[in-house]
Image (cartoon, rainbow, N blue to C red; front, side):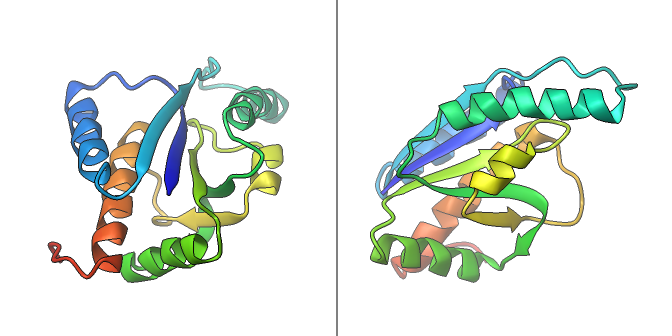
Amino acid sequence: MKITIVAVGKLKEKYLKQGIQEYTKRLGAYATVEVVEVPDEKAPENLSEADMEIVKQKEGERILSKISTDSYIISLEIMGDMLTSEQFAKKLDNLATHGKSKIALVIGGSLGLSGKVRKRSDYALSFSKMTFPHQLMRLVLLEQVYRAFRINRGEPYHK
């Protein structure tokens, strides 16, 4: 399985980079994993709704340019489905069973995802109704993907 995480923005925090490197390394035993960063658009605090849409549209075009047409896209969205770790593991296992070997997991920027990305997405996943920094979500997502592979292989993992 080839897993690509497409995320908006550059990761700056050293501790997050280290955690992402660790989980990417661990996942190497189960899948090919690549984290792709796309530049974020400058978004001052006082943007109008129209300006927010323009920012999301520009970021969305960058996101979609990094995803192959044969990828199954899972977008992280606050209004997506909330799954347990076991349900997420089963979802990934079912995708692999049905020939979906290229998975793209998409993390939007601070304003969220464009309508075009959400429309292209095959599945919307939510980790919580809470808002998390999109940089932190990369690490949380990689940990959950790693956990899913461990669950699917029947290997022990911290509960």
